[in-house]
Length: 256
Image (cartoon, rainbow, N blue to C red; front, side, top):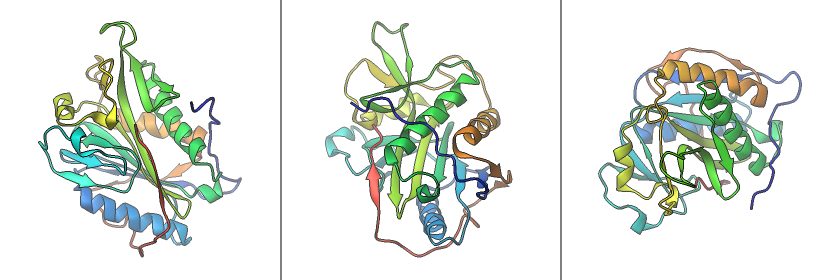
């Protein structure tokens, strides 16, 4: 049981704003991972500002540090083993992936609080579209009740999985806007086997919204929880996300 979490990760007064970037083309997973890792290392060295990077990937599966081989039911797309916590998940077109690179030493060195604040951020974003997202004590991520499917049924609309490296966060969230939900059938998403718990999206819930509108809601919801942002340029590659050296100190946190 996770209990009632603390919410909010505001930096100290006078801290530099978080850089905000949106990629307007799909980004290959390996390229994104390399750029994110390099940027996080630069942040840890004090050589780059914190960053939120919003992207889409081509269709693929990722296997977290707790992934079990039997939960890959059919390798319909490339499978990438990654250092984030959690099990299998899907990324693809129509899904907004947010890579969140924040220095928790500047905020609060509390991983559980960070995860809860990510969940709250997604919940507030969904509320902008009149979708009531909820967190669960035993299942990380953001869930939507589905009474239309039966008593006790819920679907996950956003997955969360992170890694901490020298107190800088990597990875982040995946919010289903309008992906092809059949692509999740090749895995046991996040290791959740209970038939009452499925996967949904804004489109599946009848909400028609553009990715740009989702991005705007994400940015509006970010500031009260994490602080001010700067920059709004769209980028079409991993250029300038940041170079850096590899670091051996890291820990993974599950996405379930």
